Image 1: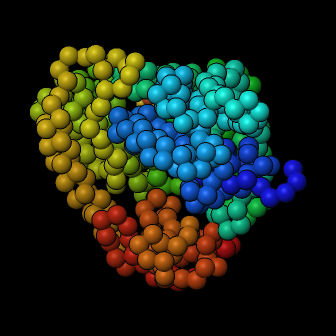
Image 2: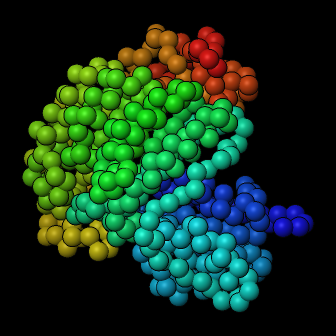
Image 3: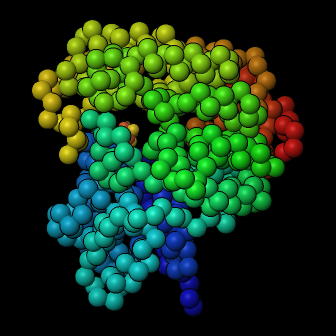
Length: 445
Ligand code: SF4
C-alpha cells in the first residue's frame, strides 16, 4: 500500500461480542484503513448491528436513514452494515436501503477486504451472509499502548434456542475457537503489558463441547490463569444450566479469576423459565448461587432480567422481584420483552400490553437500584484494587477503572496510571459508580 491510508469509522451497537467484532474489523482492514472518530470524514462507514431487541434494531434503521444525507454529500464514501441485523435481513436490507454498498453477516468479517475490492471494482453493492464451517481467528498481536484489558472471543453461536432469543438464528450454531489460538492471543496481550482478559462467547460454559481436541472451559480457565503476568481473568456470558461444579470450583482455586459472575436468570418464576426453555428452574438457579457464594463469599453476582414475557402474570412477576432480593444481585440489566423474528415466543398467546411491561420494569428498576446502592455502600471504607481504564466519562480530570468485582470507581490521578493496577480507598457510593482516593500502585504496576 502506498500513500496515506483511508479513514474508517465504525459504529457499534450491542454487546461485548460486537465490541470485539468491531475491533476485529479494524484489524482486518488495517492494511488500507486507519480508524477515525469523525464519521463525516470517513471513506468507509461500517455499522456493526445488534438485533437482540426491537429497540436496538430500530436504532440501526434510524441511523441508516440519516446516513442517506451524508452519502448524498460524499458519494465516494462507502457504507456497510454487518452483525446480527445484516445476517438476519441480508438482501432485503440492501433493497430497503439503496445507499448501502455492503451487507455482511456475523461470519463475514475476514472476507471484508475481498468484499470491499469487489465494491470498488464493480461499483455494485455486495451482500455476503454465508456461515463458515470452522471458527478460526488468527491470534491478535497488537493493542494500543496503555490498554490494560482485552476482550478475547473463545466461541460463537448458540444451540440453546431459548424461545425469546434471536441469537441462534443470527450467529449460527455453537463453534469453539481452538484453545491454542486463545492462549496465544492472551500471551501476546500480556507481552504488550496487558493485565486483564475477559473471555467472550454466547454461552462460554459450553466451550469445547463437541470438539474432542479442545480443552473444556474449566481446563481453559486453569491454563490461562497460570500464565505469568495475568492479574485478572473474567468471562461472559455463562448459562446457569451449564454452570458445573468444576467451574464453580475454579472461583475457589484460581487467584486470577475475578470475584464476579454475570449469570442471566431472566425470570424468577419456574413456570416462565420453562416457557422460555431455559433448562433450569428457580431452585436450580438459587442452588448454583449458593454454591458460588460458598466457595467465594465475596463474589458479586449480576444478571439479566426480562419483564412481560408472554403469559407472565402478576404472581410470576412477584417471583422475579423476590428472587432479586433473595440472591441479592449486585447489579442487573433489565428489559421489556420484545418479540423477535423467527423466535417461538413471538407466536405465543398471552402477549403482554406495553403499559403493563413498562409498569413492571419501573417497579423492578426501583428494587434493583436499591440493591445496587446497598452493594456499593458496603464497599465504602475498604481499600480495593482498581484496574485503571482511562479518563472518567463524567469528569475528564478524574480517572476511571474497575474493581475485581466489576464496579466502576472514579478517582483523581495522573494519566500514567492508565492501564495499571492501583490501590484505592473507596470513599463514596453513588448509584452507578463509586468514588475513591488513590493510595498507590498495587503490587507489580
Ligand atoms: S443461551 Fe438462550 S439467551 Fe443465550 S444466546 Fe443462546 S438462545 Fe440466546
